[in-house]
Length: 282
Image 1: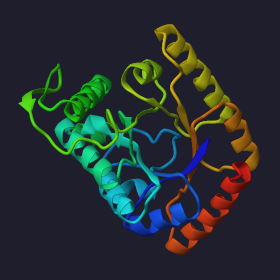
Image 2: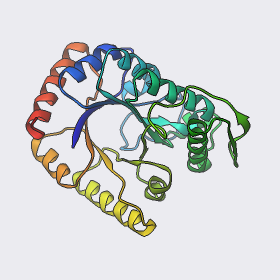
Image 3: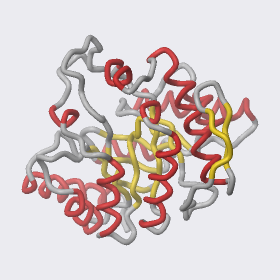
Image 4: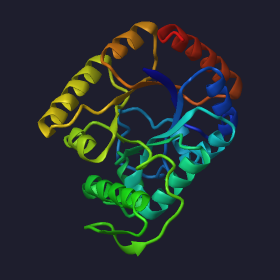
């Protein structure tokens, strides 16, 4: 089991290159970063837990830019999105960005994807909330076609293009790992058919256990091995890490939120790094 860091990277905190160096120096295996292109000034969609939208949601750097900076100053750190809002992204540009990042990181990029929850944000991108899941699936399938085919073409309901050339191709073959985020009515079916694993939301250990069991059932019905799981812990401690480890997850992400100043961030990383060493001895 690996342990990494999940955070939002903003203009008000430590810069992404310095953060990535600090994360790698403390022995973490990976760094995953969030995405919101913007927060609409007028919205009716509530934040999932009913509270106010956190400040860092308003100030996110583009995740691919942040991870490119991180790639330039690290050598072994896995670099991922948690999650890229693919329903709001052009699939040809997504394929180019992901493959370019995989190249400059020497094959260390992982793509976590999600459909999103903020309806007004989607609408500003021309994405209908009602069709965001099938749209995500087509855009992801189109990106995979570009990554794996010299002359790629795609003809679907939402995505349609004739044969194209695009380089670079990803270093990782056939493409970087694709983690499907969220937990909805079709999530586990989509993980089995479209993804390489489940990027579980920040939920309780009991709910996570239920989700892992349901994913195993879906995979069994499809006649495939159970996909791996990434768990996210908002306030980790040794007892919780041990409970999650028993579930057989591939990776735990320690949440480094809320976003704070550089000095506080370093203290938090020291604390989380010590916890990781105790939980997973070298």
